[in-house]
Length: 158
Ligand code: HEC
Ligand code: HEC
Ligand code: HEC
Ligand code: HEC
Ligand code: HEC
Image (tube, rainbow, N blue to C red; front, side):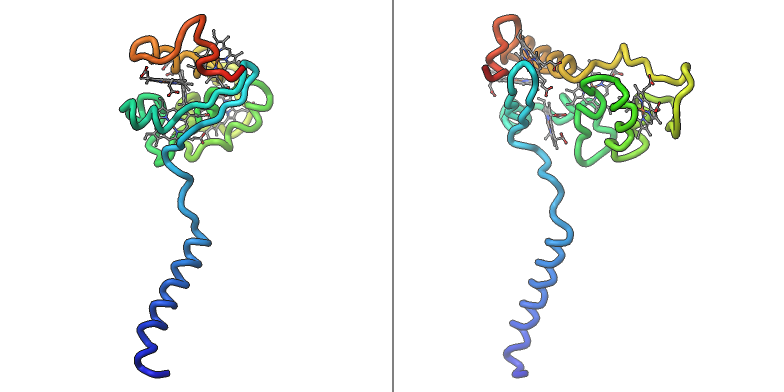
């Protein structure tokens, strides 16, 4: 090989390795979603996530009140399900990135069925729609934004 081809060969080699690495290790899911689409029985809600986090000037932790030291916040729905039913009991363990999150609701990290006295008090943990309505509207009432009896279709599609 002629000497003058060596630099270009090296560059191509480095770029190829970078391309393969990018393919094998894609970048993490975007950190601050532009919009979050929420389908529900009251009509679809399209939440302008980026605008809320950026233009309205809030900290991530103003809404993601349970960051638990993760790079990516845990979905609200992992802790505020539609119902604390058999499906939740069977599947919720898999939706947390670390055991630290278990201690948000359990006294210890459980490994099997719970004794009556070890069951979390679900009365104090709002379900999904209740958690959203409370968080969205409490802030709107104090800082501006839709809330109250006549506001339904400011958030929900008809
Ligand atoms: C005004 C409230 C609010 C602010 C501020 C906010 N978020 Fe969110 N974020 C939400 C809501 C509500 C959801 C929907 C979660 C769900 O459906 O469980 C969400 C969803 C997300 C998701 C998708 C999570 C998933 O898997 O469902 C990520 C990632 C995220 N937010 C990151 C951030 C980051 C990073 C910041 C700060 C730069 C931030 N958020 C600021 C309210 C907020
Ligand atoms: C890791 C679990 C976890 C995650 C994730 C989580 N929450 Fe909560 N949340 C709780 C628990 C447990 C409570 C019960 C009260 C308490 O202990 O703070 C609660 C309470 C609330 C309350 C009642 C008022 C208050 O602040 O105490 C609202 C509203 C709420 N959460 C909304 C949300 C929203 C919206 C998200 C997502 C942006 C979210 N939560 C994410 C666990 C979580
Ligand atoms: C948002 C609160 C919450 C978080 C966070 C949470 N759990 Fe639970 N967990 C519950 C509730 C509520 C039950 C059902 C209790 C009952 O039977 O009434 C439960 C039940 C369980 C059970 C018993 C299941 C059965 O079949 O009876 C196990 C095991 C368990 N959790 C493990 C975990 C682990 C492991 C984590 C963390 C990776 C975790 N949980 C995080 C609320 C939570
Ligand atoms: C921490 C405060 C806060 C929270 C939480 C919050 N908002 Fe807002 N929201 C605002 C502010 C501030 C405005 C802008 C009000 C204005 O300029 O008139 C706004 C405006 C809006 C608007 C009208 C303009 C737009 O951006 O579309 C909608 C719709 C809206 N919010 C939906 C939601 C929903 C849905 C949630 C819950 C998932 C939510 N908001 C949670 C503060 C908040
Ligand atoms: C600030 C925005 C906002 C306003 C205003 C609002 N909602 Fe909602 N609503 C939501 C969000 C967010 C959810 C949760 C979506 C999800 O579960 O993914 C929701 C959920 C619901 C649900 C589904 C309940 C369930 O258990 O599945 C109904 C029904 C509903 N809203 C009715 C109403 C009515 C009626 C009004 C007016 C009095 C109203 N909403 C006002 C944002 C709003």
